[in-house]
Image (cartoon, rainbow, N blue to C red; front, side, top):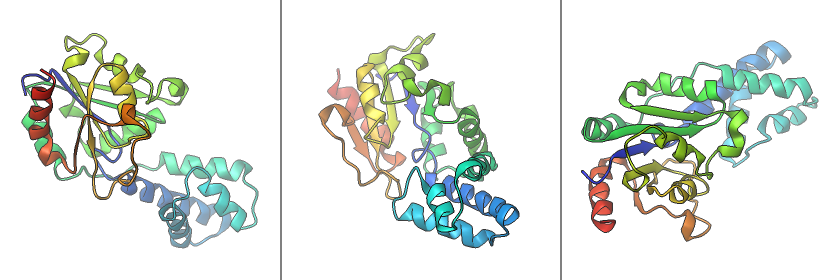
Length: 233
C-alpha cells in the first residue's frame, strides 16, 4: 500500500449506479412532458427507460418526440434541460465508503470525471462523498477536447501534488476511455467491473486500453493495490 501516493476514482458506475441517475432524469422529463404536452409522466418515463434498456443512446429524446409526431427543436432542448437540472437522488454503492475509509490518511484520495460540470458536481454532492477526496477534477463541456481518453485530466489532477505519476492509480469502469489516458500519463489503473455496470460487457479495443488489474467490487481494492505494487517495483 505504501507504493501508492495517490488513489483516484472515476464517478459514474464506479462510486454509484449510473442507472439510478438516468432513471431519475427520465422521471424529471416525464414531469416536464406532463406540463408541456399533457402526457402521463409515468408513461413517458417508462418509455424513455425502455429505450435506454434496449441500448438507445444519444438520440433518446429525438426518438421519443418522433414517436409522438413532434418536432425536436426546442422540445429536445427542454427535455435535456429537465434531465440535467433535476436534483439527483443517489446513494453510493455499499462498498464505497468502507474502501475510502481504509485508504484515508494512507494516501491522497481523488476523483476525476467529466460531463456537464454542474451535473457532475450535483451528483458528487448528492452522494455525500466530497469530503472523502483531497482533490476533485471535473472537466466540463467546454473542455471536451481534454476528456478521457486524453491524459489531460490525469496531468491536471497531479498538478501541484507531491505524488508522482508512477505512484498514482486510477479506478474506473469504462474500457473505451478510462485506462488509455491513465496509461499515457504514466499512471497504473484498475478496472472495476461491477455486475450492474453499463460497461460490464465491453472489452478494451486493444492492450493499451486494458487496465493493469480488474476487480468486481471495491472490497477487493486493498488486495489488488498490494498486488500491483509488487508487480511494479
